[in-house]
Structure formats: C-alpha cells, structure tokens
Image (cartoon, rainbow, N blue to C red):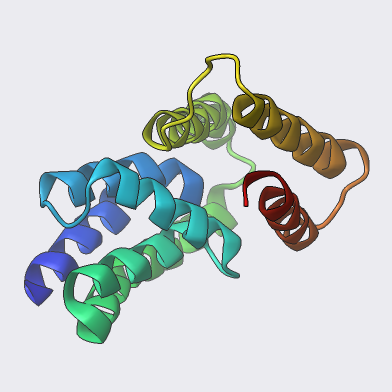
Length: 178
C-alpha cells in the first residue's frame, strides 16, 4: 500500500504540469481508480486541502495518504509528490536561466499558459460536480451561489486574503446551514 501511494504520487508529480490546482483532476482520478476515496470524500478532501496553508496538491497528497494508510501514508504520498518536482525544477531552472530570452522558449510558454488555465477550470468544474451542488432553485443553492459570488468579488475587487474568505464563508455557512 505504501509503495503504491509513493509511486502513484511520484508519477503524478512527474507527469502533471501547471501547479497545484491543475494537478487536482489527476490526483482525483488516481484516488478514485485506486479506491482510496469516493468522489464525495475526494471533493471534501480538496476543500480541506485548499483551506490549509501550503500548495493545494501537496495538501491533497498528505490528506489522501493519511486517509489511506495513516501517517506513513501521508509521508509516502508526500515524498512521492515532492521528489519529481524537486528534480524537474532544478533541471528546468538551470535550462531557463540560460535560455529564457529564446524565442522558441517564449513561444512554448505562451502556448502552455491557456492550457494551464483550462486545467484549473476543469478542477473547479470537477469539484462542483462532485460536491453534490445542484442548480435547482432552493435557498441553499441561492446561498451557495451568493457565497461564491461574494468570495470571488472580495478577492478580485478588494484583494481580501484567502484566509479571511475561508473563515468568513465558514461563519456564513454556519449561520445559513446550521
């Protein structure tokens, strides 16, 4: 089990590009395929991983590892996630430091940026679908949409810190749903 966690997250760390949120669909697929969590549990894990300090993909690896095999699972999943990134970023940083102004390098980066945004949008879509969010007209749906819009406006227009958004939305959630 521990080596399966390590190798799964090593492959994810090695083959996934675009940062934490872009990796979430890949982590989710591996988690569901291995039977470590169901879709609802994974959606909740991502919500918790997003609220915790640090990179969301790493937090997700720790959470999935822990829920699968306790503390040893967390450690093996974390190491699997960290090692490829550390090796790759060292090599890439060395290359880009020397080649950053190259036209072909800049063209490649220009093509990758929209794809990374698409991966992040897909992660948001997947989280929405797996969270049992229904678009039927109800007070809870209206409240969820209102919380989403208020949080988005607060971050974009007023640059409210994500921790304040998370705490504030949690308080509003208690007030509305409890």
